[in-house]
Length: 534
Ligand SMILES: Nc1nc2c(ncn2[C@@H]2O[C@H](COP(=O)(O)OP(=O)(O)OP(=O)(O)O)[C@@H](O)[C@H]2O)c(=O)[nH]1
Ligand SMILES: [Mg+2]
Image 1 (cartoon, rainbow, N blue to C red):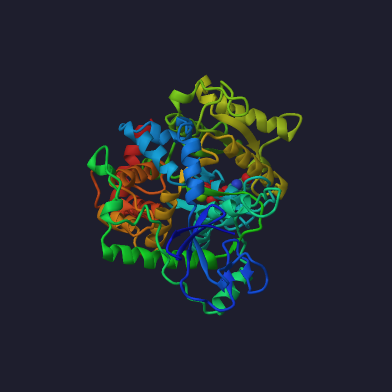
Image 2: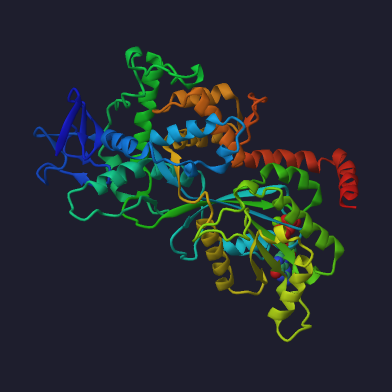
């Protein structure tokens, strides 16, 4: 079972993964990364030299090195997100590829932005997509940002909103997934077992609750040797100073160990269901206010990697203001076209006429459409074509599908179909299921915690937080992390404003709302917007 002693009896390689072996005998309970509990006499899996220990996975060294040799040459630039390819500093691509080499996980994020005129029914639609009651919706003030967990392979009709705890559990799942997969792949069964870590819905994970009761205290896990190092272990830098891994003091090292210990405990205790075979995606949804006063602030939240639902009232198709606002949104989205990738044709992805970002047009108030054709469907089609008939060909290239719905009267199957469509579109996007650096996930996890205390922090603070992670980011990697996440709109970072990095984008939206709705600004904003619209 034990393949190699890495360093003293405190680290051991098992199934290609390096484990920290707790130096203290922990009684009868042994925890394994797949969540099972081991007991003396129940087998040999957890037994080490006749004693029972808590093993904590640290690093898949063998697998990592296999990965480096087998994939280093083959890691193609198409693994690099477009946001990074488009950065002015072309070294970003190499930095990102190097980050992937140090460990990666698949990323499945869906970014959905819902736009349209005030009162079009955006919030009502979102509530129906969440399976919530929409009888008492109120006009959206600013932007509401929702985070949802959804199944990526099949649609059971449920999108679960992620609260703070869910967010942490999800990050834990992503961090643990790597280890779990390796254990499964190299397990004792002859057939490789396909398994994915997933987050359980609300039900507490009884295994881990029991483990809490046992009162086991994990001893300090040793941090991966290549990362917390003595001077002699620091790899000599061949390039610029900024690429050097941050120097770690003894005090920082102790803090890191403490933090790593807490992380691992939190991960093992969180509601992760290791046996759930479903693949999950995280859906981030922006519900924009339709008030024209907010349009300038909305630009901050638009991104080229998002998917857009453009909502428009079918019963207002003849209204010139409604048409102008519909065009305004299509124009705004078109500004985010990926020009450099337009002509790339892939068998199962986009066709030559498809442009990103994808747009789904949702015509609402179907119940208020007067029947001027044979069928309601035909009448709705005519109404919607009034909005779309003057779109230029390239603008039309964004439109993937059209729906005619009533948020009031349609049954749930209509909204289930829209949900399915959204997931299917997401699965065809270039960003889907791409490798994503584990180092980034670790920092994301820390920043999620920080966000609860502070919506806005300084670069120095983030740097400090990164230094405390088991795999600290170098200066260059940290800047890349911030710039990349700014492009994704998951935080707001401007290089020349390092004192003000906004972690909580909902907070920023609320701040905009306070400014936009302040009485003294209202008159001028409206006049300006009116002029612009003219
Ligand atoms: N009859 C009918 N009423 C609808 C439909 N969709 C929304 N409404 C009503 O229209 C009103 C506005 O709906 P919202 O969902 O708040 O519209 P919104 O686009 O989010 O509006 P803002 O947040 O102000 O931009 C509410 O009273 C809804 O009940 C629909 O399909 N049919
Ligand atoms: Mg709304």
